[in-house]
Length: 366
Image 1 (cartoon, helix red, strand yellow):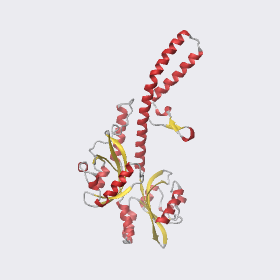
Image 2 (tube, rainbow, N blue to C red):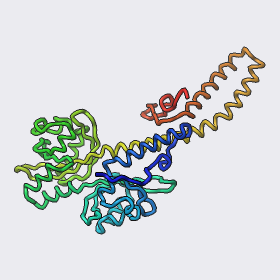
Image 3 (cartoon, rainbow, N blue to C red):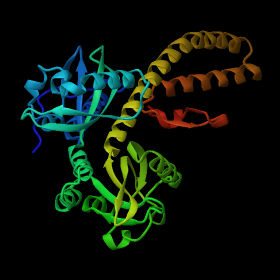
Image 4 (cartoon, rainbow, N blue to C red):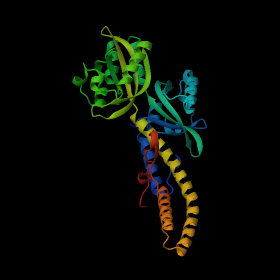
């Protein structure tokens, strides 16, 4: 059972995303969205600022074994296995600087003293007006234990138990052709296939890989290095849905043949949360730019209208003046649309570029 978090959730204020025109309604919607993402996420989420945890969600508390009040008095170093700390710190700094994109793996020490294997990603954010780090913290202990069981040749019974009962997708395929020799229940449950539909078929026949060329490239790597760790790929479910996953595999001898033991972790919720965060950041930039543009255009536009009024009084039938007024009215309508933007909506432009679609991005008419 997940612990309830009494920390204030990440809000639209913290993320610095708000719509000046919508006021409190928009703020309430943003707050509800962030609260749901933060509390209900199947992935541990935390914020570190000034060397201390500032926010921790229930899943992070469950994985670490600490309650919220304990974690908020701790630093990340206190939950990382001492021998792994320097490597964790180096990887985190590289990711925060944009020099690394792939998740990194390390051992964490739970409150009960047990070691947990963790896959982690971090990104730089602004929290309550100051620089902070947003982290995603995923427990991969079952994967590491299953791998260790195979590497040190533990009993077949123990390996099969880890293989069958793991909540992550475990599959064994032939190295050359990708024929499925065995899959666990987690794979079947998530992909929507039954065992008879999978065994004896290749991954390409089922269309599991959204980009089949990725499987060919990974096979070349496995033949050369024997192992692949945390490759971010897209898998297609039986329903046609595309899900983002982290894929790890190594070459093993199975039934006298070179095969692949692969484990897959679904990170679709993580990718969706990241995409939503980027959309909010884009919206904030758009709102600030639109507000500044409207302010700068309105003053000279009002002066032009003043001159047009005087010209029309003197030349009421002048068609050129009337046409000029129509163009000014168009500019005024554009600024009104810009001033009522509520979402980030883009449309294709020239040479593959994109521009803001004002008709979709604003509430029009207001």
